[in-house]
Length: 146
Image 1 (cartoon, rainbow, N blue to C red):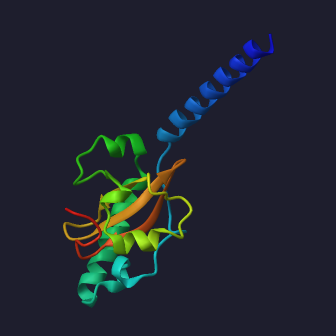
Image 2 (image 1 turned 135 degrees about the vertical axis):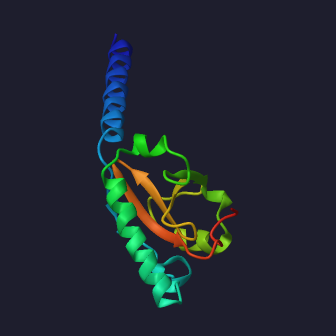
């Protein structure tokens, strides 16, 4: 008899988890810089030209405004040029993988979500529970195979 009760509890817990996931996918995106890498190879400070860096920050602010007005589900329906692209951890170059090792929201079996800021620059992050955690930036087309 307790086995049936356990199965019912498991079923109810799965139903609750699924409803929470759906609710979070329908919530507007929040952004966090908590895990942003300081390595200049994957940080805007690595953009040498001041005018290019200023352009990057201007475009980043615009992109974040657009993102925060959408749900993750809606952003995912867009093309990779305006939405996001999920890329497996293993496709990233070894140099950036080393930088990922100390970030507890990433594991070797993770997929990371890449969002274009401009045609030259991309944000690399992880979407979890309604929050897009920005981890780094591909500022030289070297973080993964394009």
